[in-house]
Image (cartoon, protein in one colour):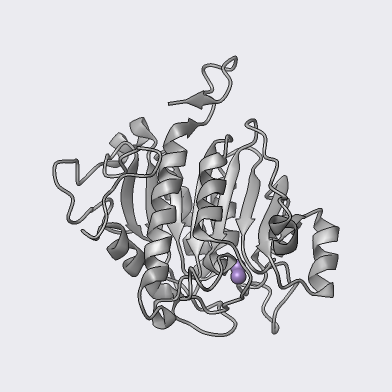
Length: 305
Ligand code: MN
Ligand code: MN
């Protein structure tokens, strides 16, 4: 991990924070994962952390989330730089990068990278958290036992996560590419799937405020009309507003999140990075508004700031 929390083009706020300050404030922290070597079809997602940051700090917009939280405030969101991914041990270096950030109590928002990174990220998160519910937005279940001989492909992370018992619930939203094998895998692991047909009939996830959520957003869960810059575009997906409503409607605390599969190489207008930056702001604001129950106050319910 390099360059802890340099936030270019921000005025009047703490541009640099220390690990100690982050431990006090428990902000959300951006952590880039420039890794796309587990993509099965097309590389390019490794460049996304840079383009999403560029969109996030662009003077084309402002730093406020729709819920009136200012993400330029260092108690809301800081930038922890990128994980230096070791090509000899990509998953080990991703996991240890997450673990080091978690030592500060910050809540990581990982910017992929391809979706294979979610498996080592969740391993890192679970070292310091209790049971988690994963809310997973994607066109694909990513539940293959193996894909083209690779058990760690971006088509497989949720199979590895469920095999290791790293999530007590996995709720998948936006799915529209199921195969017989993946349906069997979902049944085997007890995965709850709200596919696009069910979503369009009004089905929504039922997450209690007593759960702790890890949110994983594969941008191809959105319809290609909204997020065309992905390696596996799949028509018939979610709108940006659908995903914003999901994030803003979460009443459970969110301990970490990832936004993956933005591919700048096929994002001709750059709009997919802009969408990712928008989701990032709303996730940081949701993390700020719904905090985990403090251990020193076991009687309090979900604490709202
Ligand atoms: Mn996908
Ligand atoms: Mn995926």
